[in-house]
Length: 73
Length: 220
Image (cartoon, rainbow over all chains, first blue to last red; front, side):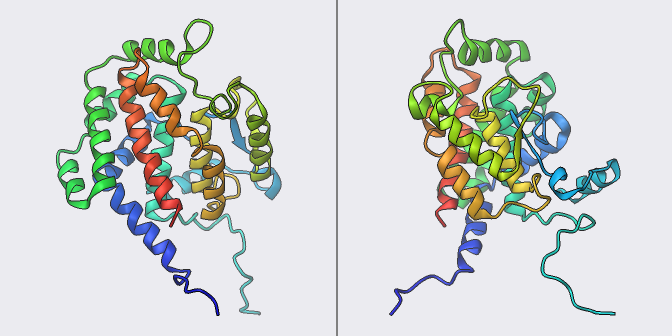
């Protein structure tokens, strides 16, 4: 007999609930700061960058980049 | 024509699906990466100051422990951002993280993990980064185990910058547990305890509160 496990799909739900609750009161403010353009993104600040597109034979165009921007919350 | 759809094709015309809680995490990591990489400029300081949410703390108090800690740390950082200049924070950054000769506070993981810079932990990290699809940026001199770089790797994994789909939580957890969790809070404590820290005490407290939430969430 297997020991009793939480159903697997409960973990993501608990995790989501916990994260949204734990960042309540600061998440909106951080999002506002980050989306204001004062925070560097896309690994501009890091010593590493994704190797991606090469592997996929895909080149990110301005159009696609712009589109991705609209999908960000 | 076949109506059959192959399972989960990588489609570039489809938006990356980022869950709200993951977008929040990505934002926190993006901000931390920026703050640990260099002193915030005037624009960022102003944005941080203006971001203070009067109702934030009250909402957090209603929500409970972790949210309370994080909201308080955030409120303190926002308040501090309104009373410092870029020049002062720049001076502090250099005094705390650069110094003369040996930096008073190290932002590199291998220092905390092995006692030295550029040691075995860095070699292990390089292997893991490469496997995840990261390459070393050509124009950056810092080693990859800089706290800012690791925060940015987490951000990139959450948003799926390497493969255009978010990295699975399991992968994010494995990276965090191996490369950030063992030393990030110790590093924050070192910043807090350093006598030259002032603004960065608030940054460290905010970072620590967030890392604590990540640790708990990854255990779920």
